[in-house]
Length: 114
Image (cartoon, rainbow, N blue to C red; front, side, top):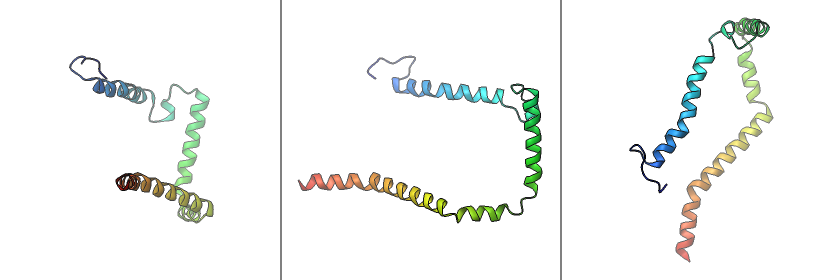
């Protein structure tokens, strides 16, 4: 980072620009390539397009009759495996926050006592 300025920008500013360019270019490419409907997707062959359109139509019809979907949602939340994973995730997150916030204070107090 001791290099001279280029085009009026510091090296760290060029680093941000260089790292952002691929994401920006891929975003515009995605807007160009992806379509709204499977029938418009030129990058799929005709068989794949028709299969995908039929599958989406069937899912849309099935989705309109979702009377039991709310019950399934709560049944999933009562599943012991889901509860165990949520407990592990919460414990991990709480532990990392505790280390991040309290360990600098702990090590600072330890250094002062010496």
